Image (tube, rainbow, N blue to C red; front, side, top):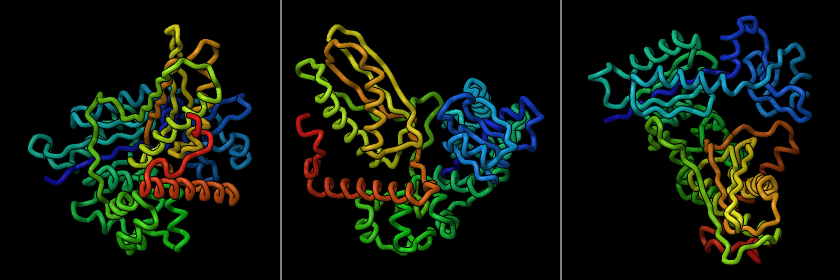
Length: 390
């Protein structure tokens, strides 16, 4: 039986929720960002602000220089969470397999095999979009395809408003003319490497053989090749199922408060977590840590990773910051647990400035080379100096 996956997306979700509550914001550029913070960055923006050059995670000062007449509002996470809960309740009559995003206006709904009960999947998608409009006064984009990958790509084509249906068997033809950056799971490093060969479209990348993809990307070659052809067997998780995460634990044989030893062990944990993330083609948006002291006291701290990352060096930078937040006592440590969650497809948007782009490309090439060498010769074929005494 062909799968039928609906992707629902309310474009610029935070702004859309704010506009429902304040109609004076309609039609004018809006930026959602913390106010009064020295290093505030853009959380979300309206289509008008986007057209003016504003992007997510851009420093607020730079965003206001690009869009001087924008209305700036503080993020109200509780409002967006309430709106997501109502969207989820609107979708529940359609399927028990519903995978919501993290307060971002996205829903995957699996309606495979429900035609005899609910009618054709196209009708289910249309009714679901209509129901969300009536319940929340939000107008969603919706797309229908045989996989989450193709459905999400299709909804990106019709943003900020519209609908798209990809018939079974048409996945490869649908993806062929598209630019590579539209495909979820294709990372910036992948784009940079293909760009070195003047490859920017899916049909161009599909001309590479399996051996050539393996030479370029190592283990990721098979994954990327499947993505380019629209192959994505990942399931839609049932409502209430815990989201995936990567957890690494280190328990010390002898309790310690040696800072250098802790950082060496922490980097080992980060390497293992980063390897798992890259194998699954995922990136973490949040890095958390649990430390347990000799006297039984536990401390839990976390930080957001912006942008989401699976890079060892970026993960270690975040993890060390979390360690500083959690480790405030002189008592020895017995166990440390590293948690990478809020996993998403790696962001494919390339940095705006040439210097940042080159630095990111160099970093991605380095990680890809390390992964290839370790896959071929073993995990200990390459060892980072700080881990030698771990």
